[in-house]
Amino acid sequence: MANGRKPTPASPLAAAPPKTLRVYFAAPLFTLLERRANRSLAKAIQRELPEGEIVLPQDFKHEGKFNDEKAFGLIFADCIGGIDAAHVVLAWLDGPDADSGTAFEVGYAFAKGVPVVGFRTDFRQNQEKGLNIMLARACAGFVYRPSFDEDVDGLARDIARVVRKAAPIRQNVSGKPER
Image 1 (cartoon, rainbow, N blue to C red):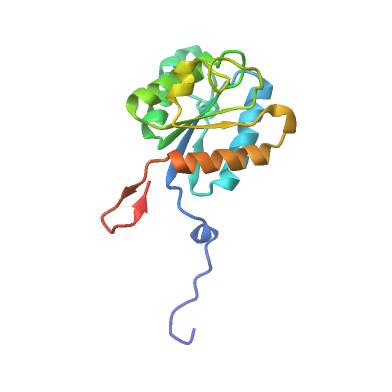
Image 2: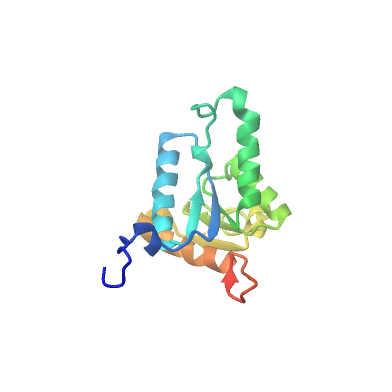
């Protein structure tokens, strides 16, 4: 205390970069495998994208309950609000036809001008990028990494790179870029 002030302990939060990039993660979320895969990939993306806040709609619940039919309107509103507040929508587009809820979220985001980054690990093919052209053309960025390599961290790195490119950047009053 040579200068008369108490030393302040370093806050672990002070070293963490601010969360300046909101990413809404649209994906099927109905089975244990889907929910675990979403969470695992979201955590891997978070490590690659420390400035990002990954929003998983599978975490939306009301009055302590998931998927309560009395709260369907609230869950729908949470999803719409999550997309409206997002800088980027990330959409998992696997399957012979993409999940209907994810397809809706992609269309809504596209209509609202929120960039969509689609990704696919499914090696089955369709019209374009393995997808229906309406989904493929709604994506501002796309990652295709066939499931054969099973490298979640590699997929997360690829997704983080494309999300950064797709995210809108604007200048704040000080002239510094912000999202």
